[in-house]
Length: 308
Image (cartoon, rainbow, N blue to C red; front, side, top):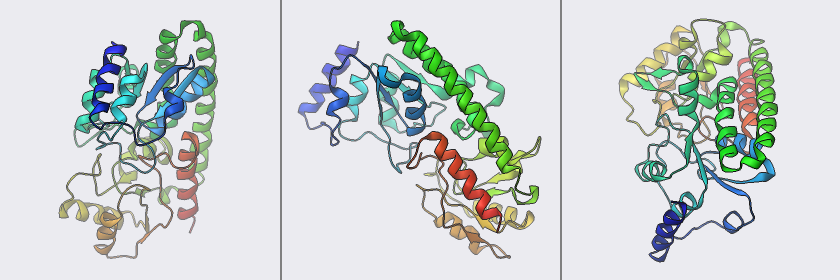
């Protein structure tokens, strides 16, 4: 199957579908398992489990929105060549061309779907839709490690003990970090921990780090829905402005890869003084560091802004 997919990809290449980025080292035959991850958040933990036994490459990099991502030149080659593909699932990668090729690949593991199967009670819904942003809760994202270990071990059985050991160490580190992040957020007064962002990417974060027990739903509100390419209505603006007034929220937070127009409209409708932080949070983009750096960054920015 991998050979036929690669042949199909090479045929497309003859018609102008070659890669625009230099990934020659990833395509080189070096005896390592070739792994493609849709996002940086996935790539980071997969690389931590596989280490030098695998060649892992992230498809969607930088500040690109993964929700609506459509294939660019060379992406089909990467998907066809990969022995394993790790995606998020839960309808995150809903761009038509990407969704089609992921569905066609014989060895795709969607970590969000695996987490949902493992702990369905922890998966959130927003306005009736499953929330795909499971990585925003470090303890929940750690639930995907078993699926990574299993997939890599099936591809490379001789290294299964290596993957299991790395997975166990990574899980321990992530759960320890999760506890530290909770403690850090709880140093912020309860009445300050109300988060307004550009789109609905922070519900898992709010449940894990902003609330103590029940009532986390009121801790996180955004004018745009689960996917930021959705249509924004005047009712959305009014709803968020009313929320800001109700909880006396004085600062809103942009996200690194999303236009700030929606937040500016919300601020303009508020009857009290509200400012927009000049330090964005990372929601759908991993930022310049690794996955845990991304979550730490968000916590530090919130602590800093809420202390003013």
